[in-house]
Length: 418
Image (cartoon, rainbow, N blue to C red; front, side, top):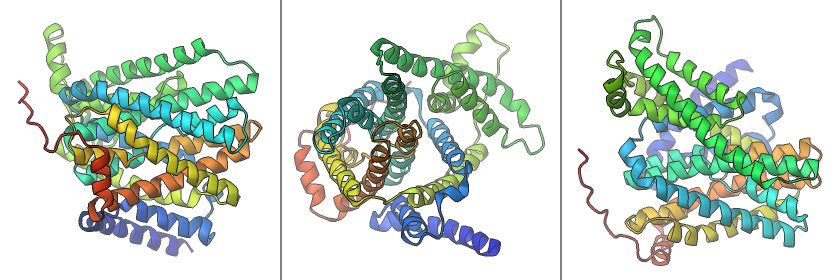
């Protein structure tokens, strides 16, 4: 049996490389094929069950998200972030509000949940998954501006979803919702996690040149990343935002190093070299491969009516995503990139984890919330993958471009930064 498992892992890694090459030719996202493999292993044949992984499964998914955010953050330049931060924040807020409202109204009117419980389900599904969005956006080779907007939107909305859902869950459990406390927690989670990540980047960039002299020291940056994430979570902040800002800091050493060296001439910060960046890219590729297989085998099909409700909610969310992009993204974005943004509303790790909490706390309709969320996670990832494929191969692309008339036909020229 162990030999068969090891052979399967080897075949899966080879298959993942094949799926990436297949995406370049067919526009069938590799994440879709990996999820299908997970579905076949899990809910279809029951060869593997999520319970067999015990506590390792959730830890693995969290590690994947941390690496993904960090590695993507190292590729974000401060100049790009300045240009897209306002647009990303607007898109994040608009998408979160619309998504929460659509899900809450559907759960209230169709599934007959209480108002508070319906809003909780809406906040759980309010974000978009960076673990799905980032790889697809990278493979599509979207414009830097558009890719950065999607990336920051997914990171921001994921944190908003986690903080608000946990606050609502505590309020429903205690029978008292405090709006001021929720807002304060959200702002603190963003700001303080960002400060922690930035300080970590400054410290590590000045230590990195010495660390490189250690034998087998390549993984020390990852170890420090884990420390930053864990410390942020233990302090009650967002570990995901801390990991993201830490990556951005190491990717922009020339920028913050120039500022700090004026006041502290003894500092000598360095960023990641090409060898280290390649190392992290390989780790992310492997983790991403196993992550999407794990997502597929974790999907549960327990109730047909819940599955159908989840499918209907998913369809509504993708319809609502079109006006969200139309009014939440600047018109200088190309119509092709706007169309792809409108096709990306996948739910993922954060939603799946949050959905298990109401049932654990024995909240009313906890099983419905969990099963509905699992269904929406599955269908949203499948629909995102399908729409990306259809936009390039069928008239669906023309429909999206018609609905998003007014966006730029060509990427406007950008002035070179000094």
